[in-house]
Image (tube, rainbow, N blue to C red; front, side, top):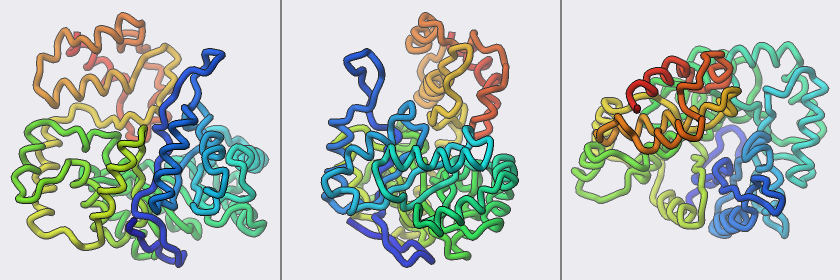
Length: 378
């Protein structure tokens, strides 16, 4: 396993970090959806046994069951081998007391005495201003003083200007951003990577594959990558590009099975700072141009918009729409979308209430995009 420098913290973490959000779910004996603990154990134990030491979870993942699954999997000596990162659910914070209550609940979920990396989840500028007024900076200082957390951090979904303001507004130990070769001018942007690096603040990357879209590429993008003399998968290209940046510490990859875990272990073992040639960087630039020409809506499938009060399957619809356009098939009379409609979760149910847009980290005009998708897919 390759390890990366974590800036001013003076530690090293694995280049590959396990993103636990996509652990598979199954119905328990009561018919309730729950994390498949057996598979979660396999994924985490295999990754840690092969050198992974950064584990990322959050209070809201897996219908609020993910932290418990991670805590259970890390029993038997595994907790001592890793850095655990989890996130304060800002949507549930109405007071400073809520912050302490939620932290204690999360610590109990994880079955730990302290949390290594504690992130304020999915910050945008509006949420930051609200939480700042509630005393979140003092809250983080207090947890560090009590040694209940080691590092005070945040994950981010907004634009560069917001990122710059938040980064300069507190003595952060780490930041987690959405970044990939498609998002160089989106979210924190490449300028944000450089800014954090200039302050020696380590960066953890999420959505390195844009919710899997950069792993399952259309034929024309695949041809771009295949034009290079050395054969690599699209996912390898995406991760290799990220790990070329010296400012980046760990790159998260959400895995759902053991096969993906082994694939990531192999891929990240071939990465490193500054190893991409000029020709390789040009290949990625060409792939970006081709991909941008195809994508209809920039949804990563994070599901923050769900549940929809009207039952609309927002990420399912957007995923279907993108897939249809990417592969140039007949997008009308789409079988997958017809099944969504028949199940009562179609875009025709949208009443444009706007609740989804309040939570969308990509700032997508969801109601308008749903209207277009409904017209084109039927």
